[in-house]
Image (tube, rainbow, N blue to C red; front, side):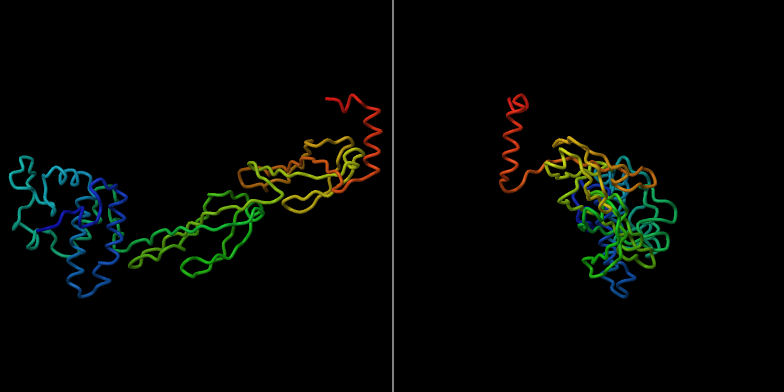
Length: 304
């Protein structure tokens, strides 16, 4: 007696369309007659999963099976008042009721899947070929690699190594697609793609907000009071910046175009530098004397 198609494909009754297709593809790759020449047992199992997929892969047939209107081979159930004149046992198809004359009929049924597959293209393509599955991979990249772009040699779990170009401006969670670098195709079909999801590491100096870069700039008290020219790190190298006289902690200076480089659709970002006044790390007698004298002359500046 033919088995329940849900059991044949190893899926639950509430399985989604994607679940059914995935189960069928995985089993078909192992049981396909081309991979098991002369193996009658594998051929029979392949017929069985093909029939199950023909029923569950068609929304209408699946609904009719669930209502008990057709059996596990797609035949009308005896006594079904909604019978549509489908073939009866003995009226076509090999003994056992599969309804397929040969492997060509199996493929024809697969390719005419009622879920919208185009003529000549089904789960394994019109000629029995099948595109390889996409494969996913994740790897970490440095902050500067992500914002500036870079090339990295990546070792995949399979042991294969690839040179990967990282586009400038990538953020964590974005994906690089490498066409044809996924799982190999079946029976002459094209290979799938490799999808590389990146995770961007944090940087000790720079923070990113959109396409802008933010960084703190430590300056000495004398530089803040008197003004100075100082070297400032950016994602593309050090530049000279003028600190205005009387700058205070929290003051922000802007470096135009020093953020994430421009892309085809977006302009380059800017870098924002926040001044932080740094006192000497060890006590300085001269500074303490100056501060006392200054505080005595400017009491309003030191009172709460």
